[in-house]
Length: 493
Ligand code: B12
Ligand code: SF4
Image 1 (tube, helix red, strand yellow):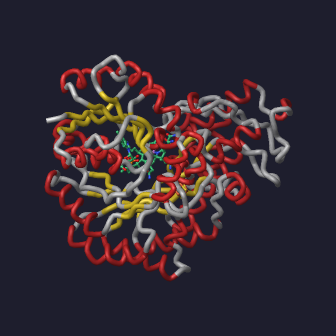
Image 2: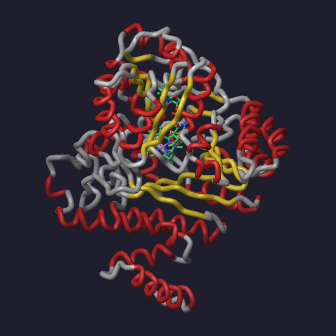
Image 3: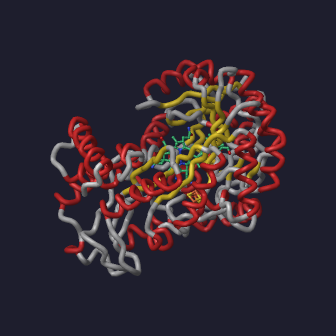
């Protein structure tokens, strides 16, 4: 029996792509094995030597690509065929193919199947046919990585291909972005499959019955599972799908969490109102909804995510009424100062989004949790070009951090300048020491964002804490006590 080793970077979430691909390998009569890379490739390499596969496939994200490329380069001297797939391989095929025999673009099911069947030659393999998701192959993987089996939360995906086009997100990338990496025939083939939107990851919605089967499978192999987390970018976009789901899912008796946008649960729209109600009744205990920025100009011009503030208040009031828990998401350290009209920049802007969460909590009782990340300027996204154009970041993807918790690589301006903010205006930027100070504050604010968001007038506390010298936990607890006594109980400013 032929063997394939599949790998990805370790994360708290199951490597869903690999679990689905593992099923395809079994369908094709191959013996698959999944190994995850924690820090470096040492243990992965040990597994490879022991398992001795015919093929090794790896899923790459932008950020972990360099480490993977360098390991794959070493594999060139070994007797094993190599495949790279996943988001980075899809968005940067020409770069990726230098390090592997095959690079699989986009949804990988069919291309992977054809590679295993030896129906395609080495090279870049475009998406020429979409396939439905096979049930994720969790059994063997959970035996090997039992922390995922023991976890009460299991991740799943019910649909891919978000219809929105936020500038910072790779989802809006289209065939146009990689056209120079492909042959005219590959462009033609892929173009046919991608449909009108030409998005590199096209829409793929699993049927409600398939989703139910997968949950049943999870319950069978891991009976201690207490919650399903749908990792979809936007869950339940089609109201008819939601209606069918709401009819069938409750029989499983297991709550779930989902991610979507505020617009989809707007109580002022009848379908959206119904969606929120139906999902809640089917067992949805919580939703993750992204705010990203508090400033309407930034949302419109920088993020292409035009969302009224009133909508957020309406939605959270409604969701609270229905008994939902809500986690909001925001990005700190955004590239600000080059918009057509004036906005706050740097820490002032970051504190505004914190303040918005505090106001939401005060007036609606939600969010339950406010999560923040530090913005990374990926080349290949629209905002990556924006950062380059205005001088916020001149490097490439090789220097962007691996995760959203790491230090910002941006250069920040002193204040709002307008679209003329550019490389030539050296005096427009913070001095090196000021840059470092802001980046330090940014990291502290990110780490403590949820803490501040859940404290009444927490934005004021954050501002004072970040402005003082003592940034220790002791300093935080002293300042918090003072804040709660003075500002909250006695209304002292
Ligand atoms: C869940 C999730 C996470 C989870 C981890 C997921 C995991 N364990 O794999 C967490 C929260 C940890 C996470 C973190 C990050 N994520 Co994330 N994440 C997602 C999300 C929402 C779903 C991923 C998923 O499960 N998809 C479903 C499965 C079935 O699809 P898939 O993994 O893509 O696999 C398919 C194909 O890509 C392909 N394929 C994949 N691997 C392979 C390998 C082979 C051999 C083959 C043949 C095919 C193949 O075939 C699969 C089946 O079709 C996606 C968005 C999305 N819709 O995919 C973003 C996404 C993958 N994340 C993204 C990013 C940027 C990140 C971060 C780097 C962000 C940051 N700055 O910190 C971090 C760091 C990740 C890391 N390396 O540690 C980007 C990736 C962009 C890029 N250019 O790489 C995405 C696409 C979001 C976006 N639209 O911009 N993420
Ligand atoms: S809504 Fe989310 S997944 Fe969709 S384009 Fe925007 S950030 Fe990406």
